[in-house]
Length: 172
Image (cartoon, rainbow, N blue to C red; front, side):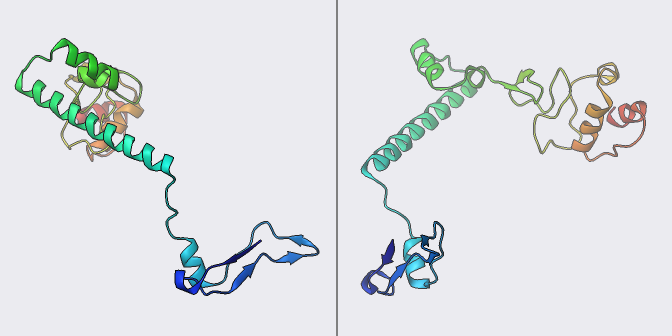
């Protein structure tokens, strides 16, 4: 196999061939010609099928974003969503999104916007604001494991060393 890219197209115009070693053509070979390599690394044009799929996905994605924006605006304004519109949304999105529910790392459902899981206390965001705690007292914190308490301390920038009682005291 050989490659030849005309100078008018951005190549050098020479023919580059695969090396042969002991009568066997190399399966992998390098092209040591900067103009030809640059041309070959360029973007390969999409096939008509790929262009069609790209256009359809772009349009569907745009429509779905508009639906989500309209849904969020209607909910924020307190407007009831008509049943037919809700059916369309349910066909396109996870019901948990529409109900305003999210899952923690452990799989517990929580209201959207929760900073910590109401059941296990795990942080719901990677960048939880400092000083945010789950809506729970010392009794709820006592029910958590030391690793969960340490994670909560870490999320708030608090020291993570010490006994369980020390961690609960820091988080209280």
